[in-house]
Length: 373
Image 1: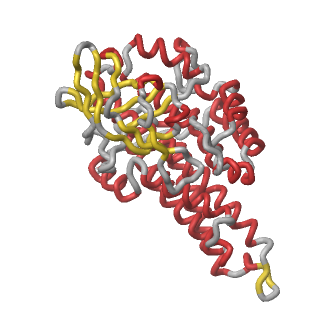
Image 2: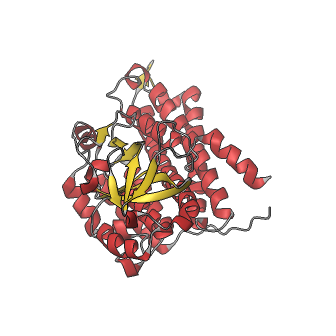
Image 3: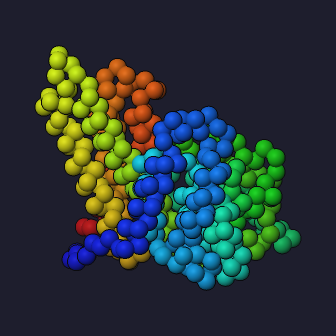
């Protein structure tokens, strides 16, 4: 396959990167992150309102629906900087829910919900089930139409920030085919959501029981576009997970280097030892490589064929880069590194989340083999 891609960094991306860098640094220092881990909501509502005021929820939403009218490429630097500071909140799931509506929603659904999302109401996706298959078309939840309503059944897991969401877009099987349905918050019976324990404690993940949930028949997204919508969500999610992994990897490298420059052993700074210097350089090179793939994916996202290849490369490289950088950070901090008080632990947990959602490195490389050869 002949590849001729010009990697560009747009003016909008540069501006958003600078704003996000300063905002996340000021609003999400590590002590605040650790404090919010113990908070039921998991994020600061005041900071969320500031993000709304910055217009971030509408970055990739067309102006006709109240958005800024840019693209997923401009969302990437924001998510990268949020993850660099481990900032919590429903920004990513809401952005992905908006993408689902843009890709497969009816005009009525887009006109009704997207302006409210841009104005600050959160949304999320419910696509993963207990079988944990990364193929989003492997769906066991069901929707049965009776009397103008859809009766839902089944279980969804890893529904991020579901307690904060006004809408949950869930995948179901209807008439033997995959479909997507919008569930209003008010339609959920008591006990339908149950908090999950996940490795990344900065997240708020929920198990959603669909049994007993009923929604209007017009809550279905356009069934003729379900396959395309699920494919779009898969790539959009992978792109943002890559951005999160790159941001976290950068912090791991910085955290390690700072320690190597201050910790002394046998009267020498430990950063002077080759056994620590060389792996740290390897971690930096892996991060820079992953970040190049990330912005290549952002640049080509939406291009048929080329975009999917770039996103899967970015997902594979970023997952591996964060895993290596976080492991080295833990190891080089010695005994302290293996305690919960070491910040590298938080980034290693973030790495587990980013790697295993929507496919780890081997899975992505297997997909790439089919695309490239």
